[in-house]
Amino acid sequence: MRPNSQELKRKSSHDTEREFGGTLGAIGIPIFLPLTVLFLISTSRSPEASVLQWPPSLPSTDQLWDPLALVVLLCWIALHALLYLTPLGKVSEGLVLRDGTRLKYPINGFHGLCITGVLLMFLVGLGAPLGYLFELLLPLAVCAIAVSFLFSVYLYIRSFLAPSHALALGGNTGNPLYDFFIGRELNPRIGNFDLKYFCELRPGLIGWVVINLGMLMKEVELRGSPSLAMILVNSFQLLYVADALWNEEAVLTTMDIVHDGFGFMLVFGDLAWVPFTYSLQAGFLVVHPQAISSFRAAIIIALNGIGYYIFRKSNSQKNQFRRDPSHPSVARLETIATATGKRLLVSGWWGLVRHPNYLGDLLMALAWSLPCGFSHLLPYFYVIYFTVLLIHREDRDERQCRTKYGLAWDTYCRRVPYRIFPYLY
Image (cartoon, rainbow, N blue to C red; front, side, top):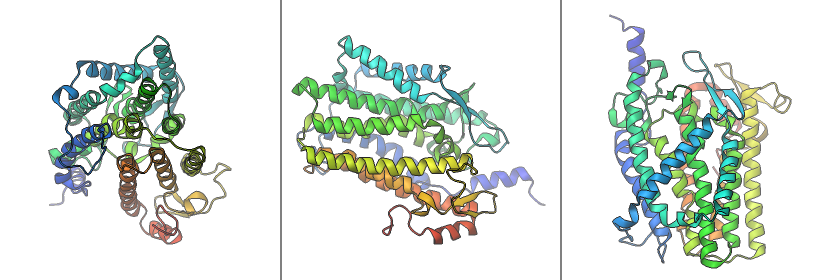
């Protein structure tokens, strides 16, 4: 007896290759990464700031909990949910889903960033102690971790009410631990409010910038003015966040939105990992000030500028090609045809390496750490972690593209042999 189409779909979904170590990773990562966040914050404000010290300096219970932190976090998320619903900016359509429909998304994240900036200036003008974020950072991280777990449980339970075509192909394995971690539902929504899209660029990413500003204000409280190193870190990372929100529409074609389900992996990454580990350099500088010369600052600025130029130009080229291959800026680029009907770029930025945007990202990551000097390893956690992350993400991309494009991808790899670093990798 031949299996029917539903059985074939179910078998295909359950046989999907499991990522991040499968069940073992789904158990270990939700334990290890939250502890890593708390460890890094605690270490960054210790006198030694040594990630190799054992046993590590552990915070007391009083340092981990403050009811004000929960109020601040929930109000922050509510503010950005309100800004998400504000009828500012345009509405854009995502890529075509498996059922042939296209979801609509508000493109107003940059407006949210600007409004947040105005509100912060107003609060600072009224004398609000923004530097108190330094003392509140550990309790805020604890609350963000707790909210991530609770939100992930909600997402997992509600995914069983979603139709089969709304589930992520890689998140419907039948293994509860793995599906909870990786995410079952692709685009969970409450009405028109897209939960994954909202978390991707709003509360966590903008929260990162606000935490940085709080660290800068704490330094002003302690020393009378912000250091050049602190100004560089704040400026570089503000540029990165502003760029992401200005080009918010581009996120609609990324792996996070198109491929990955919305589970603990993305929820924790968006709400806890990004704001509390990406701001490590600013937090480190509050306790471990660094004096840097104008010449050294100029070199660091140039490095960040080169990285940003590569990152922005390559991403813009890719996004324009995906949106409109006939556009004059990409129409003359050399491409390879695939069996899916799509074409692969083999010239321009994407003929240099397979992931030029990752190269730009890593150059910027290094520039964000250099203002912290060379006496401690901790400020370089971000660039080390990000290198591992992007190499892993590049490997995921490779496997998916080889499955999707077949022989055309093999041809592309022969034409563009280097993955991220020209002549190296």
